[in-house]
Length: 276
Length: 354
Image (tube, rainbow over all chains, first blue to last red; front, top):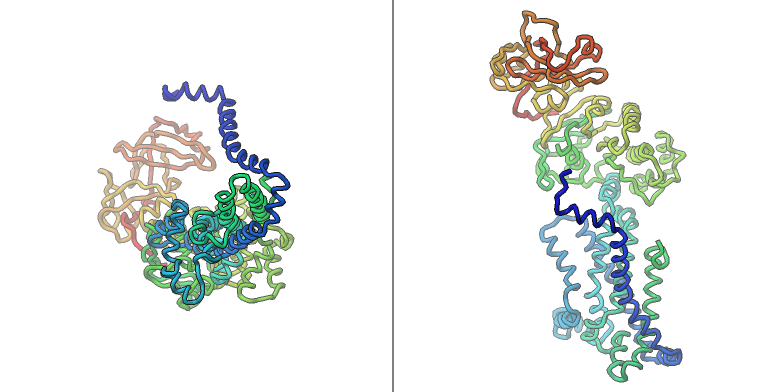
């Protein structure tokens, strides 16, 4: 045997106690899970049926929830429209500066969202490059739905592009080449081969984009405090009326967003919850 | 006019380069490109198919210059190593993909293509549920139904397990001959090349070294790498003095044909051409030596020996002879390498024109 002397005792220890490894994984994993689930459970517990009823009958709360759902949906569609072509280029083409492009795509993940909001305001504000042009066409990004969508799109775009890129990368390029050699144009090969085979990943990207958008606060609140999206409304209630009053609206928002997220996720993955 | 003509093709993919490849594929012919992995066979096939753009050179299909045309306008059928069947479509949908992409709605033609390859009963199955052999037939049917000018096959047997491969090799050879479609076939497997090829082209390090009929290439390998790849033993580097003399490590050897080569060149031979004599004889190329190792096998065993001058000699002999003569390590023997079986091969590659 040429086993190194230092490794031998460790390896023997690991072999004799496989159950320790397993127990450690379950304990630490369980703590992580509890950390995520406990605050949400506690929030649900705080809401009485009457306070929920109150929140559900408040026109401003309902309006905020509806606005969030709508704008997150629009954002998911816009993200797919621009994100899938970008993902296709990243997955299939070799070009100079590809690493830089990928870094730019990932940038919103690292930018604090209030910073993103301020940066967006520079471009989309009344005096910004795009904002001033849009203003001329009668479209304003400050304090409008367009501003909300811009904020949502900025912070959620990496989820769309990366999901779609991974999905397209998993399609064997030989299949596209086979389609081309059989007489298909690049567009036809994409629509009949690449798109159907990566559809699930692209849909997953849209669901993630939707979920990220609906939960966005920082970037949105700078571009549009009004009209209020649901997270802004909850924050507003918290500031004006305190923890108890904001909790009911928070639970309502949670229920609506979680249920839509689960529905979309199930549609995208073809299975309910996570049963494998 | 050749169905496919490749002229002075230079391609660079990443750090790999294909240099000045020229070849012609005639109507109904199977040309097998043979070479070790990494030689550039697939790059060449992909460039012909239109998946890579060459840096220089032309590709003609039936006289039309297709060098700058996209793959869909070249009318070449491609079968890939792993077949690249469309997993989300049935067998019939896979086969009708080509005709539909070209705007044809003639369903009977697609059915006929399935029948021709004996896979009509699989029409509604998904590729994922098929065996390797069945997949290959689907891939062939899918390529042939578009009536391509030529077929490009990239190691179509290497994805199969060994027994299936041997079976399908014969089947594929018969099918290609029967279909009469000109075929450019890429493989690293010598046996596959010999069974399938009308002509064989040897590709090494991105260069086409030699093109010819199988028997011709086996008999007259042009350079030492080709000779070694085709299973010849390399005796060593000799100084060749035409017409018949070669000096190798102090030994005087006789070659039948120096093939116009003067000076340093490799001497190659086939182990089965080496004769093991009982005793010395006055003839050219006879060496005394000692057996170093015997590898018993069927039908031929391999005898590894070294001459008194230190030259390694390999001989193949029937297992029966090896046993009868009690050849084993340490036994003194006399070898005869007939001048006719001693080949002179160039050391530097020579680019072939196919």
